Length: 166
Image (cartoon, rainbow, N blue to C red; front, side):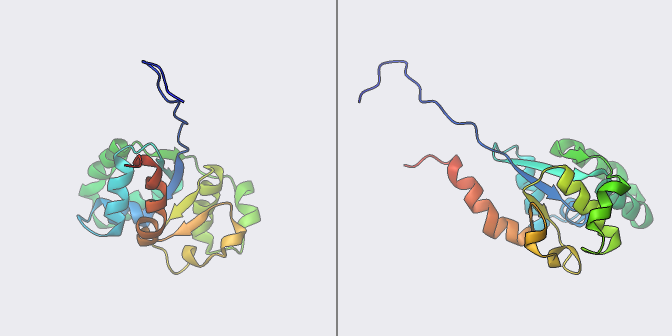
C-alpha cells in the first residue's frame, strides 16, 4: 500500500513512566557530580517523553531537614534544582493513608510508600538498602529499585521505543 503526499503516520502517545525519587537519591544526585543517583536526576531532567519525575512533600521536607543540619548554605541550590527538574510533588499523606502500611517497613519510611501510592508511580528509586529495598515486591503497586537498577535494568527498556528502527 502506498501513501499519498502529505500523509503522516499516526503516532501513539507514549505512556510516561512515573519515577518516584526518595530523598536520599535527590540529595546524592544533586550534590555529587557522578554516580548512579546523579545520572538518574540528569536523565529525569531532560524531559524525555517516557519519564516523569515524582517525589513527595515528605521527601522534600526530609531532604531540607538534613541539609539544614549539615549544609544550610545548600538549601537555595536544592530548591532551585527541584524547580529546574519540573518534579511533581505529592502532598503529605494522611494518617489514614499510613495505617494500612503499618509494619511493612520502618515507621519513618511509611510516608514515602504512601506518597508513592498516592502518586500512582510505576517505580520508586531509593538508595535505602536497609528498609525500602527489602519490601516484598508483591505488596505494592510499583517496583522499588536502586538507582543502579533503574539505570541498568529499567531505563534501557523504556528508551527502546524512542529510537525508530533503522
